[in-house]
Length: 174
Image 1 (cartoon, rainbow, N blue to C red):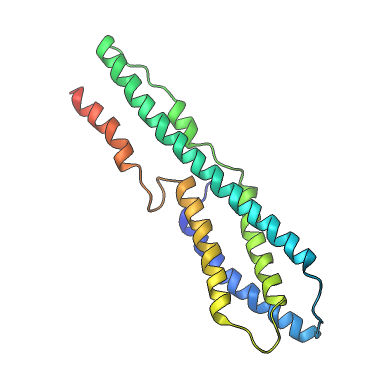
Image 2: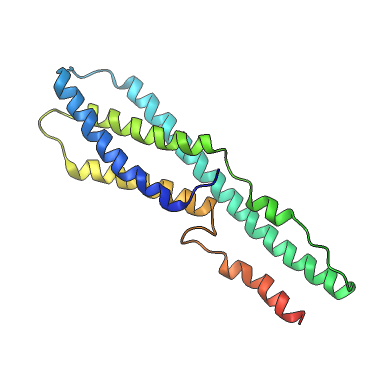
């Protein structure tokens, strides 16, 4: 299953909704302030999941870039030495390697769960929409950037300058 970077936009309203639901849930049940240990553990787990997903996406992006350059050089060398060109699948296989869909579903679920807990831990009377929106935008932007890097040909990030080496090579073969 593949994701489009624009699918990260669904995180923003979901987080805002869950922040408000968590805040109202606490008001409705008149719950006292609880220990922050469980909340901290969940937020830490969410942070690790977000960080490792982003780190993996950046690593694969760099690999894609390197393989594109290598393939361009290999094709150029083969063209100069042979009349026949092998068509390799290394770069294409690298572009098709992504984390399992469950990782992205977990990101969405943890985003909503963390927003619920953050809303739940807010005071009943004085809540700041500024902080609620800032949290939702920060998480949404991070997930969006991760998906942009993970799927570089689907969103705003393009390999145009990286693909230029293959385009130049093709033009030199004519």
